[in-house]
Length: 486
Ligand SMILES: Nc1ncnc2c1ncn2[C@@H]1O[C@H](COP(=O)(O)OP(=O)(O)OP(=O)(O)O)[C@@H](O)[C@H]1O
Ligand SMILES: [Mg+2]
Image 1: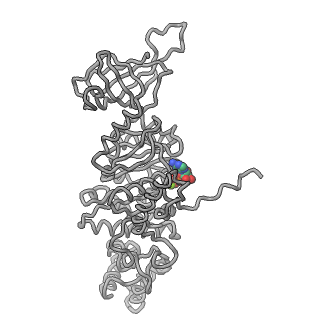
Image 2: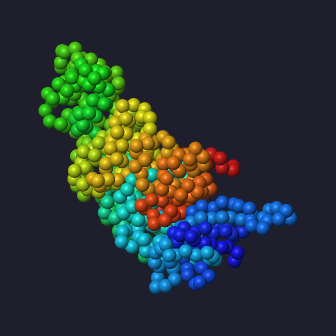
Image 3: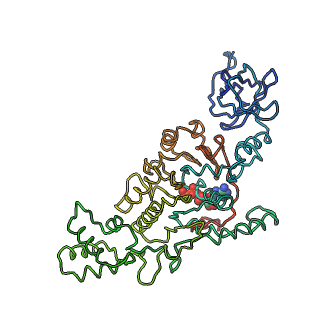
């Protein structure tokens, strides 16, 4: 053993080792001092340096110098915190024993439920679990296309449904989560028959409380009743602004005030405008026709119920299959309506996790129209103030720069999967300054399904490999058999 470690403050350590004893960044290590003390540490940064005593005859001699943190003291009556007294000048450093690492990670999730994600990717056989209570902060899940974000998010949702009581609303632009209530066949889960039976029993109870909105027909179609949108959203949809279009805006207010109740449809509004002979009403009617608003498929009209009317009181998870809507405009209207609704309900203080996949389309840095701008405003408000009302976000995206900065900057958890772009890596390092930068850089070498978890969800920055999902993936990937050998 030629690896030497030292600590001058009992909190951090440095190690020096020949290149062929290098360990991956993020590894857990055991440091044994000469006087019989033993510590668990985590390696967070490594540089390659010129070895001591290198001569001209050994030009290739290089060493690594690594830095990390001391997590706990292992000798004595069980693990204890390392303190400022835990200074040492020389310790041998080896990769930590899997059992020691398991015990360390297990002790952290003791009080809260664990979200079993898979295994650590740096050490075989050690389960990787996130703390469920860590999802009481906003989370950003990032990785390039095809890195496994949606798959991993699906696994997290399954675990949250099984292990916690929190309500979950999923904004699903690619119809990826429409099967979150449907278990896979046992063979695909890797479970033995008894485990599978127990899972099926528990999951069935949850699945009965999952509602997916997005089918072509009532009652599961993704439909909103125009009159139930907030007045501000109604005006946004109609494209009327109180300052820029005072006449039309005023015609809008006068007309909806005359319609009894709140359950009016877009058709009822148009009908009222038609009945009026006033110029402003006529202009507003023309605007609605020009923008093709009545023809949007998002409206609940006639007897078609809106989501609110078909939602059972005891729902546990909602999936808004935004992918079932034919246009960006409708997806933005639906997102703004749902986010606005949850924000309006905040006084109930019922914990709710809002899961937004492809978040750059729902709360972008540069919204494409007024509807998306409204959805983004709601997301910013929830990101900034939602936590005190029990509203938590999980945002997934390939492009951190395309998500509104006031949303992203409120995320205290980072789940990072493979990421090739150096621009994106640099952006993440700046935004998530709580994550060790050298670990973020590792993301360029992650394999499919591999990731890094940092923040309130993990005791230490952990490198994980997502395990198998229990439920079926949705989405309709384009078949790849056009390239098969014939
Ligand atoms: N841990 C895993 N084990 C097995 N297969 C996986 C795993 N993670 C992802 N996959 C598969 O890899 C493919 C890409 O994964 P996924 O759709 O989750 O990527 P993504 O990051 O969401 O991509 P995009 O940004 O394009 O939506 C899918 O076919 C998925 O089934
Ligand atoms: Mg995806």
